[in-house]
Image (cartoon, rainbow, N blue to C red):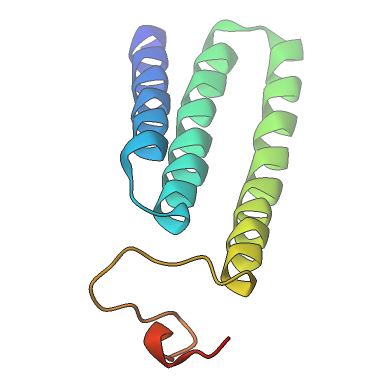
Length: 107
């Protein structure tokens, strides 16, 4: 059980790194980094919780709670800063969540 959790966690972290290297723009790279990094790290921490004693459980739960609270906020802040800096998207139809076509935006 523990071996499976560790292998899955390391695999997801590796996929996250490759996604950050190969994906075309900052927004998709940010998605790979935040989602893959969080889930991979959470699986490794869960493996440590299975093996560790009672002291490890409290530390692991605190780490997981901190990650749940900070990972989405930091990803949103980086994405919003990139959007404000007009970081380009590498897609055919560039429609952002505000409903405007990116080609309609003026500098």
